[in-house]
Length: 325
Image 1 (cartoon, rainbow, N blue to C red):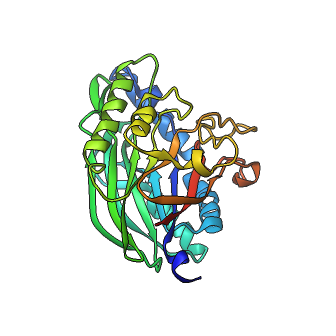
Image 2: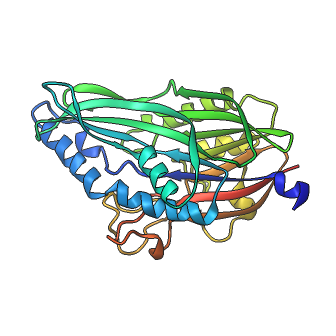
Image 3: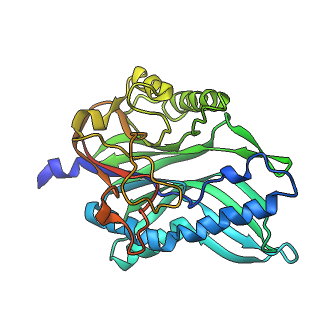
């Protein structure tokens, strides 16, 4: 195997879907809010992350990536308004790690960043807390060294009207310097603002977030890899995507991918029969002296669905083996 083997690193990015669309909450009155919160939480339960985590772990087991960047690795909690006691917690990272352990795979959390964090009343008598997060997991005994871990939340964000108040819909990033066989590169995992055509400001926010990436963790001379859910179409129509390519990044899929590489989106209930993946917005971008040995989409096949017919996520994942020169 020798040197060549050690200079390669396998990296996965996957938006694992926090389990519901938050759209029903937007523009609600205080009177409407509890029923809508219950509707959202009902969908979280129906899209059953504990079952989906098994399907996601199956894909991870096939590829055994050294580093996994997750988006929407959220926490959901039911909290008693009377006692503030937490009745239920769904911690998507903890649930996934447990499924990986059952398969004899040992990953640990390198870092998480919490972005949107909101607690809202439901009609069930409980408050529902939602914390959106991104995470980087690393495979134990990968031989990689990690340093200079940084996290941040973007300054650009969308203030969303929910139940007569404003909830800040935030996104962020995690950056780490990785040393493989004496060579160092920086990896940044991120999730950018989705674009709603009815709200032109969402595009401005996303473009600003992309610039924050370039001027923040991207402002380095060492080789650089950006991974994540960029919510920007790679077909030439995505302004943020185009800006990143113009800033010197190369799209790993364009170099080594076979087929369309589509990663989004299944239905929000994850029960669509045929795959609806039709855009490529989950990306591995790099700047510097890397060679993309191979790159695949995972979780996009019928066979990848759960026994209860759920897709593993509304996104497919992407995994690449990358060599450093």
